[in-house]
Amino acid sequence: MDPRPERTAPLHRVAIPLRALLLALVVALVPVGALAASGAQGGQAKVTKGITVTLSPSSRTVDQGQSATYTLTAASTGGFTGPVTFAVTGLPAGAAAAWSPSSVVLTSGGTAQVALTITTAPGTPAGKSNFTVKGTAGTLQSSAQAQLHVLEVKRTFDVSGTVSGLLAPGVTRSVDLLISNPNNKGIAVTNLTVAISQVVRTPAAVAANLPCTPADYTLAQYSGTYPLTVAPGSRSLSSLGVPESKLPRITMLDTSQLQDGCKGATVRLTFSGTGQAN
Image 1 (cartoon, rainbow, N blue to C red):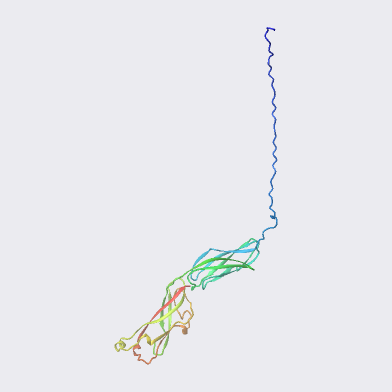
Image 2: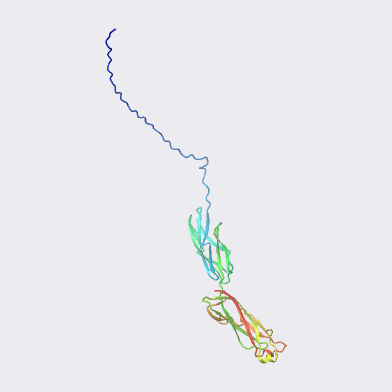
């Protein structure tokens, strides 16, 4: 055995190069299309042609004898084209409607506006009325509702009268009524009434106990037409063109009873009437 120590070979470091490997991941994106259900292309829904009408505003308030205007809008639906006419129902008594224009021609998808003017009369009842407007195009129709509120207009006036002459048994005299209108607007008088309130005898007739009462007289009321239009100020019936035959009349009856107490007597009349703003 060799006693000499064993030699060890020196170690050499070896550098081993590392290569980076790039792995490309390619992702393919596939667009997803909408799948049509069976029958989806079988046809489109049928479009129905028509018209619609609307009113604005929904309510108006006017005095008796005045006017209110609404706006009606007519519209084409479903491709309708053609003329449309209009009508109104449900107005209060004495009210009348006017259209401007009276009809329109709609184009496909188009609209048109019409003015509806409602004119009330002095005698139109006060209160709220719901009315209906209707648009018609051949067999097509559409309707809308609105409200008209009519306010009562109270006007005061005075009535007096003048007898055309002296009375005697069997004699008739006309009574020309004088209507005094203190308002700044005209009034429409709708009723006039004359009544005997009292017969005032002379002191001599009273002393002699000679009777004379309202039963010795009779009255005929105004028989002309109403309403009577009276402008501000005072107007007699005759100045308004009322013939004498239509004026109120008072007659002293010719009776078999003693009527000496009516000699020189004063017959007092009362007058009343009703009317509205004109």
